[in-house]
Structure formats: structure tokens, C-alpha cells
Length: 216
Image 1 (cartoon, rainbow, N blue to C red):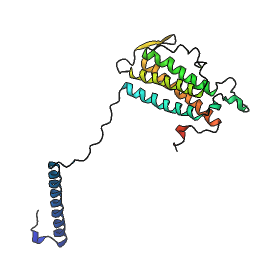
Image 2 (cartoon, helix red, strand yellow):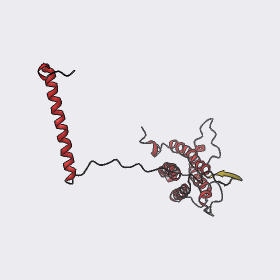
Image 3 (cartoon, helix red, strand yellow):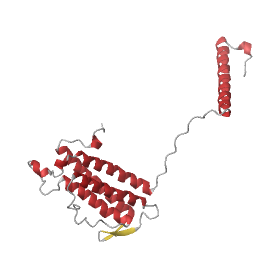
Image 4 (tube, rainbow, N blue to C red):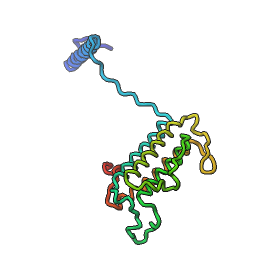
């Protein structure tokens, strides 16, 4: 039931007064903004659309992640430590005999990148890769890091070959066959394993891995 205006209390009349003022301001605000746009005013910026993700971009993102971690870690190690091996520390109770040097670890990582990813791209493995530790002639820090970077370039090309339609296509792999997506993921998992070892080599030499410096 609606009460006559003269039957309302002072508080109710005051509330109605402010409510009316609010409605008037809302209408004026809307009219002003509409007029502004009509006269060429710039409307509020719209959010930037999120890029669509497909099979290729999802894998390529993982390739880029480990590329950054591993290249930065390799660059962080001084050149005079590239022949470092944990065996040289003679840690009691350790089992580091015959493990790879830091240089061999980097070259091994790059070699496996080539062996996995060239299956996807159809490229030929470089002739100078004759063992799991990569080319023997690469001895300087610059040569070894470039070898690593070149292997990741193949990884990016491999990622671009993946589609939802061919992801399960079987390709020759280690004497049997494997799906394209499994080969791609296998390469990334191997990089993760090698990066974990690289981190330990750096820390044994008092070096904090670049990827860990701003993580806290």
C-alpha cells in the first residue's frame, strides 16, 4: 500500500529526496558519456584478446622454457669450469665416477635434442654428431653454447609440425615407433632431467642458477 507523501516520516522523505538526486545524476552521467562518444571521444580500451593455443604453440612454449633455463645456466658457468665434474670434489660416500663434465652435459643435452626433434622435422642429424656427448671438436664455451642454441632452433621447428590431427601419427623411433606427441614430450622431459643436473653443477661451484635468482 502506497502512503500519501504527507504521511511519510521525515526520514522517509529525506531518503526519497536523495534517491531522486542519485537517479538524476545517473541519467546525466549516461547522457554526458554518450554525447562524448558522439563527438569523437575515445571509448575505454577493451582488454587485449588472449591468443589462441593449439598443439604447436603449447609444445613450443615448453621448448622455449627449457631453452631459456639451459642457455642461461650454460652462460652462467665460467669457461674455466666447463671441464668441471663432481668427481673432482672427492665427496665422501658419493658416486660421481665417470660422470660427464659440464661441457659434456651441455653437449649431450643438445645431441639428444637433435636426435628427438629431427624425427619430427625430417631433417638430417649433423654429420659431426657421432656420440651421445656431441661433437668432440666443440671445446670452447662459445662453441658449446651455440651448439645448444642450434639444437633448440630445431626444437622450435619440430613443435610447429604438430597438429591435433597428426599428434598420434606413429614415426620410427629407437628401433620401434612412437607417436609424434610422445617424441616431442620426450625431448622436453629429457631437457628437464639434464637441467636438473646442470643446476647441481652450478651450485657445486657457488653459482646460483639464473632461473632461481628471482624466484623468492
